[in-house]
Each structure stands twice: as C-alpha cells, then as structure tokens.
Length: 339
Ligand SMILES: NC(=O)c1ccc[n+]([C@@H]2O[C@H](COP(=O)([O-])OP(=O)(O)OC[C@H]3O[C@@H](n4cnc5c(N)ncnc54)[C@H](OP(=O)(O)O)[C@@H]3O)[C@@H](O)[C@H]2O)c1
Image (tube, rainbow, N blue to C red; front, side):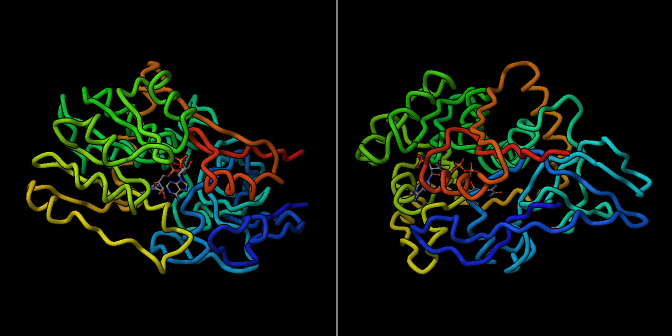
C-alpha cells in the first residue's frame, strides 16, 4: 500500500499542524508506458509549506485539499517503463508526502525530475545540495555580492538556509553575525560554524546588539524572517548596504497583519538596496551551484547541519518543529518504508 498524508484543513496561526493532515492508504499505482515509480526516502520540510497550503506562492502548483501534501524528497526508482530512468536510480523532486509517486519524467510540480548528485547522501541532497544550499549560494553571490571584509548579518541563522549563508559568507572572507532564537543556537553558530558573533532575538535588544556587533554598519543583511528583524537590520545598514529578502517566516501564518517597514529612509540615505530573491527563478544556475557546493562539502569546508526525524508518521510534527524554532540546521524526515 501507498501511505499518504493528505492535506485536509488550512493552517492558522498557532495551530498544531497535525490538524491540517489526515493519513490514508491507497494502492501503489501501476506503472504505464513512459512512466516510472519512485519510493520516497527522505523528505525536506520547509517553512514555505504553510504558504503552499494557503496557495499564495507562484512557483508551486496549488495545494489541493484531499491531495498529498506537496513536498520535496529524495527517492529511488523502484520500477520503470521510461527510457531515461532505470530501477535503482536516485532522484529528487516534488514527490509529496507519500511512500510512492508516479512520474513521466516530471514531478508533481511539473519540474524535471532531478538526479541526486553522485556520492551524495540523502541528507546532503535535501539540504546543502538542494533548495537551501542553492538559495544560500545563488542568493548570496547574485544579490548579496559579498566582498572580503564585509559585515554580513543573517536572521534565522541556525536554520537551514541561514547557517549555509553564514558559512558561505565566512568562506568569502566576511565577518558574520547570526540572529537566532536560543542561546543553544547562538553557541552552536559561533562554536561549531565559526560565526563571529550572535544575537538571541528572544532575550536581547536586537537593535542594540546589532549596533554592538556591527559598529561599521551592515553591508549585507540576509533576511529569513521579515517583520521586526527587517526593521532592526535596515536601520543599521552601512553605506551601499544590500538587503536580501529571502524569507518571511514571521508572517507566513498570518498574511493579514504584515508589519510596516520603518527604515526606508535609512536605506535611501545609505544608498542601499533591498532585493527580493526566489531561487526557483534561477534554475539555470542550479547545476553550476550544485557542483560548487558539492566540492565545498567534499573538501570539508562546509559543515552539513541536519536535524532529522525518523518515520513517515513524523511528517506533520517536523513542520511543527520549524514553526516552534526547534530545528537546528535542515529539518528532514527519513521515511521508514518497508519494501
Ligand atoms: N527565497 C527563496 O528562494 C527561499 C528558499 C528556501 C527558503 N526560503 C525561506 O528562507 C527562510 C528560512 O528557511 P529554512 O528552510 O532555512 O527554515 P529554517 O530556518 O530551517 O527554519 C525556520 C526557523 O525560523 C525561525 N522562526 C520560526 N518562527 C519564527 C518567527 N515567528 N519569527 C522569527 N523566526 C522564526 C526558527 O528559528 P529561531 O529559533 O531562530 O526562531 C526556525 O527554526 C524561510 O523564510 C523560507 O521560507 C526562501
């Protein structure tokens, strides 16, 4: 049988995500001519799953009620009648919260099914070598444009994208300051990843801490959260500072109450810029970025930060963990499919 987590109920602020889903068991689909069947191995959990459920993004197909929750995953081809995919091939794509997914070469989102880079683990293939890594790498170099000596401030710094942005900025010769939601995360950023400084936004005065750690201003602010932290960081921009608008988890659960940007005058006065970035509109750069990221991992220059749960039943709980700030590094779920 094919286990599925079906989307049933729209999310709302503060709810437990288990309530949005219902588990079902349906027959494993037959493989027709030109098709192949994949068995999911490792699911990537995204903050954006909440906007996906609300169907407010333009880069994913609408999340239909009664359909498996949209999700990126690594998988193995277990049966094939497709000329380009053979049994045993390792692939990745939008395969949904289910054990098995049928493909004709495209995934549920209509994207071409990707190959897992040779020699990469499922964990690497769903983190540093997938959307998180591609976002960090392409966004940092295309928009942030780091220069050695720059001060780079990152919010959501202990999360999947944030920790990679900080590590890549360190490799680019920058001073890196991370903002995160616990002392444990702040300690990890500095002791394990080599960040220069950190700010616990839940216990510290964020504008004062930014001023203390970034005395010459912020050259690059990488925003993963929006809201108050965007205001605090834009108020501390250096001349010519660049703000990369990557994500806004602080408002994903309530789009009706978006805080205003107070510091636009400081951005203008500092001749700064703010640029929205969405990696899915940079697919032409994925292959080159993956090659660079894989080399950095293989050389031990990038630390792979993974926070994984085990078992298909854990998928909704993994989404809760992201919104409760429990994850350190990339939140994944390993499937426990018995074949
Ligand atoms: N633009 C793109 O192409 C692109 C691609 C991928 C991801 N993203 C975005 O990048 C951001 C980070 O994604 P990720 O996958 O790396 O997630 P993540 O950072 O691994 O996990 C989310 C983290 O956000 C923090 N958080 C949760 N609720 C919050 C709130 N109300 N206010 C402030 N922080 C909160 C928590 O850490 P704390 O303990 O620090 O609170 C949590 O661990 C998200 O906004 C995501 O949508 C954008």
